[in-house]
Length: 262
Image 1: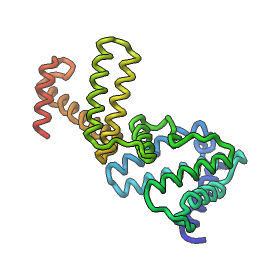
Image 2 (image 1 turned 120 degrees about the horizontal axis):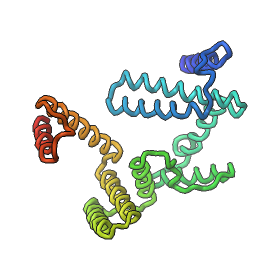
Image 3 (image 1 turned 30 degrees about the vertical axis):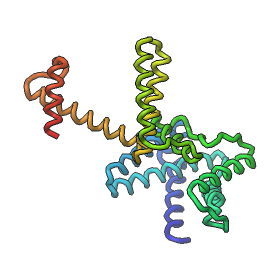
Image 4 (image 1 turned 60 degrees about the vertical axis):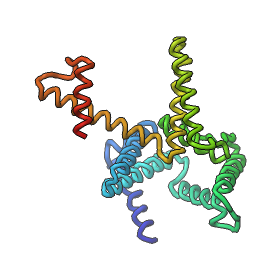
């Protein structure tokens, strides 16, 4: 047993101990259903650590997520569904099968060929398992909307469905904005919602084609807005007032002050 295997085994033993009758009351009462929110939370904490580029924090959060994964696997093992060893064997076999250009003599000449081979392999795997073919857009709807939109866009591009250039996407954006304006004049709620969605999806394509991640870009924009608005509140308090008592003109004045500070 090498060092990594030894540490994996030790962590698995710790989790098993926590679940024993003489273990931790909190850990013992967990079920797959109750544990799910913690798994989602840990994943987002890891993503935040990555965004902060804090390597120590990333290391800690990776550890937390690994704990969560093994804990979840342990819950299923207790139900006699599968073991952690079976999980590791399955993902190892899957990765080897999906990379024949690495683990066998299959020749891949381009990224397009790589994506095509990957998709064909997935289809073959699903058919052998009797699973329905969900196509190239088999992404969970629980993904953040912008992230899901960008992943869908990338997969469509992988099949050759791409804008000729960035300028053509901006033309499409202008069309969608005009359609939204027209929809707001008509006052049809479903049509307005539909056009807003089209604009957001087009913006995702602009981000992707420009080499940026739409989800990250919006997170940064939201962070910037919250930082500036918080500073506005601080300035208002320093002037012996509160933001809620200001009219729009006064708020705009504070906003410009904050922007000039930055």
